[in-house]
Length: 290
Ligand SMILES: Nc1ncnc2c1ncn2[C@@H]1O[C@H](COP(=O)(O)OP(=O)(O)O)[C@@H](O)[C@H]1O
Ligand SMILES: [Mg+2]
Picture 1 (tube, rainbow, N blue to C red):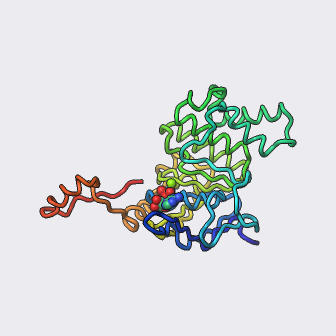
Picture 2: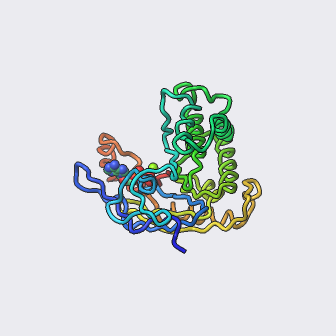
Picture 3: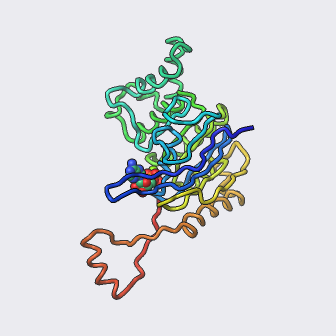
């Protein structure tokens, strides 16, 4: 049987004013249908670039993506994207934003009443039914993000691509959204690729955690299989030895193997000060946290 989603030999080279920049080098990843994959790695390593290539928004410089034996060359409704910065149309209400996507996928397959019920159902899933007729300018960032998630889910995509979808949400809403996502995914069995910088979120949700090396020329460093039984319960897992082992594997990768060291003081003026103080000490470094 061929792989459901096959990312193979992907390089991504960006032109920049200072010459070319190789963001990704030989990224390979095989994903089965219904798998939940998390992409984790330090900020700027190339996670969003990988997601954008799978979404068909970027074209890889070499290599490519094959979904169900067909090469991905452009965006398509079977691959819905939840962007990091909620991307709603500002002149449409939450309801209308979801409606636009639903019409794109289900026009001719649902009647008006069914469509209305479906849109409302998806907004209820993300607890946005009370504000569904508000426009993006009238709701908070977290609420906009939830509408973006409802819009993606309402398309019933075979592949759901999410770029740090819960990063802007408060802890309680985030936990609720993670639980809903697990439930929805177990019902629909869609394939999910989610970028996160939250180690607990990655372990809780994923079948596999794909850990990326630092760029430039970033690639897949290690893949960690998460065999924890489903449905998963965050409270029970907090005490679970295997959960904690997986968690520390990811932390080890990020903070030992791919440790990212940056000077604490980065501005030009500050670097002058640093030059002076470096004569006395070389110790002021921090590990980048996202
Ligand atoms: N359009 C672009 N042009 C030039 N460089 C880019 C472009 N998009 C991303 N990059 C660079 O590629 C690297 C990876 O970016 P990105 O995929 O956004 O990282 P991440 O999502 O892991 O934070 C970064 O160094 C970024 O500056
Ligand atoms: Mg990113």
